[in-house]
Image 1 (cartoon, rainbow, N blue to C red):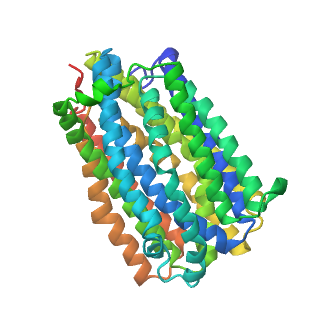
Image 2: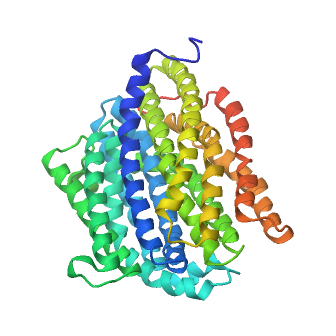
Image 3: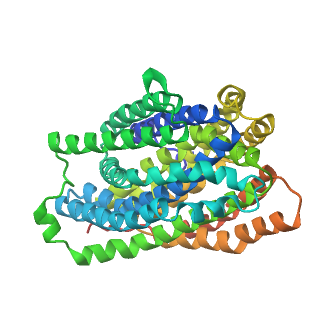
Length: 455
């Protein structure tokens, strides 16, 4: 048992790193759930419009997080080696690549929203009415791109060096602001105009802008070791930039392939009916995000602990920590399954204004996703181990192969050749994650991830 379980101080350290990240995500998720509750009060169609727009925002967020993860591999190890210049160069990488991504995001949101969003409701019986609600919302959401980049890059960098409390505080404040302005602007409280879907967008813009300003103020008041100056920008280490990009390109490929597959499958689920399917599926994810916070916690704790150990050159210790974290992932995943099943009881409370058909889809999906939690927490921990040592090939190969060879063919077959409903289709597709675990297990045993990138 000693081989599989560490002493309490090790797990205490992991909890101290992962718990604030999970709390931050939980607060954001609770506010998102409140947002969905408020929008759901407008009915199935308007909620469906907001949520297909949210899928585009989700894709951008995944890409942005992938950029931060790519740089985070080096940020964590440079932190372990106390290499301030390396941390600063890594921050430059994050900002430069994220800055390029914002151009595409703003074009999608502000120039081509309807053509892009229409892909999410192909063959849906209420596609035009859903799009009429989605397009104005999506256009406004283009304004959050720059604030979101600045906040995400700074917050991720702080977590990667072990500073997890300040991002939590800022998140609490920003999400509270978002909730308040949702209440004011969606329904026209305190004398404000009733803006409905547009009100939800304005509330997000205000909250994201204030969040960015708080991070900039924090950097001014408490400068971090990764903080860059104009001198840093003028003397970018392009050799290091290339190394990060080489490692990070595979992370980006893996994450974007995943989000594309998720977007495609969501669009195919949406084709199984009208607005009740779109709103029911979307509301299920709003609730499931309450227990999806486990992924951020396990990935951050695994990446920081193992990454810093590798950065110090303690390679044998890192191998032991890998086993300890994977064992913890199994136990943690089972615990989150229980938590997930309990959240099913929230559906009739939070989404009582949706149709009964939408509520049933939501409840069935939440229960289904809760059952998969041990599998998902474990595979996320496996990927976090490989990324901690710079082995980004594993994630790209495992995700890419399973997605292209198994998941996408299966979902297209079920859509066009079977009468299966969206919940059953989702469950069948997610069984392929067991294949990911098996391949990743064999890959990790080769120990390609056991590297000191800061040497």
